[in-house]
Length: 405
Ligand code: PLP
Image (cartoon, rainbow, N blue to C red):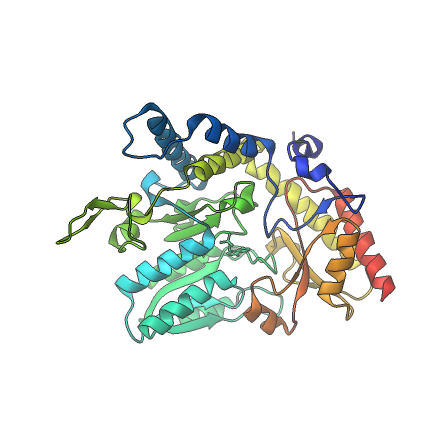
């Protein structure tokens, strides 16, 4: 049974008052709130299990090492990776994409080669490729969108060429909520021997992900968007790729032998984990994933879909409402909108005064804003702990603000 009130009671921040009003937290696409079990895990680790991991011969170090490696196995199970060593701990989605752009680009790309991205990417899946393109004199090709905010698949496939080295695309758009048909896209890309990197930052909290079923070559996400701590994330990479890529950063942990004549590198996954790992963050992430598993991803998806449906219906009743992105069948997690000519910033500021937290602006997707011919939008993004009552408050709030203008 999915009991939203019981779930809410696990998130102390949700009972906070903002300007004397109940908090309505609808900025989950930016970051999710944390359940008590995750915060307790962090405290427990610092108080009881803290010691630097790997190579330690003492009890605490071995205990902390085991907890960190167990966390890797929890992530492996969560995304159905074949091997635990295909799970690389990073600082987040952004760092993971930079890692692949740098290491993959170094090994496999040369002047005149092409990388494909899409118009709906977050800046963190655009700028690393631009930097690589500049460094290696590559061409960045950009997939267009259809009028209803989906990828133009015919255009995408027309961009495939013998020079295409990689396709990097998001699973779910952080602005439009569009769920891209990544399994089909990957199948088609692989027919042309093109590897695919999937940005999973906005899919991982909302839907079951099976990297083997998708056949993704790289899949990335951030812990903080799925009830885990900030500052840690995951790069999944197929063993065959990770083994071929050169290290991203040098330092401790990532080496086998160091001498001034020749340094050799550690095996996977440590080759990509230079320096002291965030072993507190990894175990807190594992706790967050256990929390999700306990509730059941299918239950979460069903609850959030119900909320989205309700929110779309209620928001569409408001005069002047303009919702961006596809129909419900192709959408997850977020609703971006504008009302009449009310500036997104004014709407966000005034909703805040009602205790309603939404995000405004370009959402780190300026090329998409350009394609939509807007400067920014208001974005409400949903999570497992949101309720229909909160959506009523959002709709009432938006209507109230609209009447003021
Ligand atoms: N990709 C998408 C689609 C996102 O929505 C975000 C964050 O909002 C990121 C990447 C970057 O995630 P992070 O800042 O945690 O690295």
